Image (cartoon, rainbow, N blue to C red; front, side):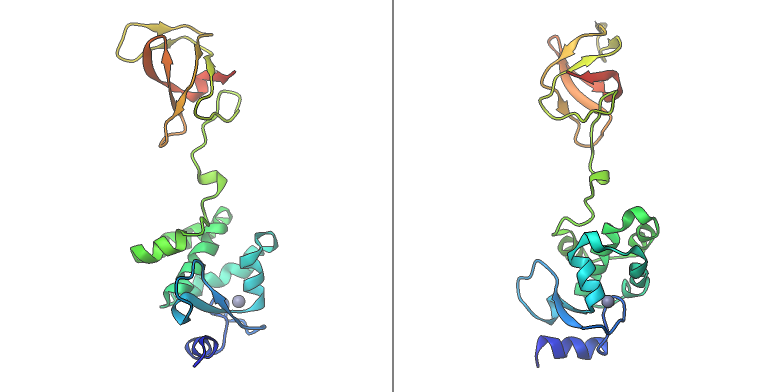
Length: 192
Ligand SMILES: [Zn+2]
């Protein structure tokens, strides 16, 4: 049997995402180590087009994920997870994502394409004016800051060179004020 006929058999010849029947084809769920039924889904043209081209996304079409998220097949769950992640800003997909359970190795597969790691979810450090800060930037303090664990005060206007970003918290950067390495809150600095 071919992959196509196997997929047709397991899905009853309907799209495994939206149950549509328009131009069904095998869709391989990247990254594919071994081609076959386990790494593929049967998907209609509407779904395939939107999976491949985020510009053509129609959020309403993907309400179908409400049902297909309960599929017993890992390859289907991976695509559902990716599409929900892509649509997360709509609100409802996030609720569905919260309800979804993927085995650790399936979740790893789902995350492999970087879907859902939207700009908004990344930790971005910004200075008082909203300018993005990066490792190695120089900033200037916009108010006097007490240096934690010492009696020293760093004066407004002090330059802090070669800052490093706190990877877990967008509000904190680290930098040397004089000889002391200290944590500084991003809203009290201005990039120079
Ligand atoms: Zn479909």
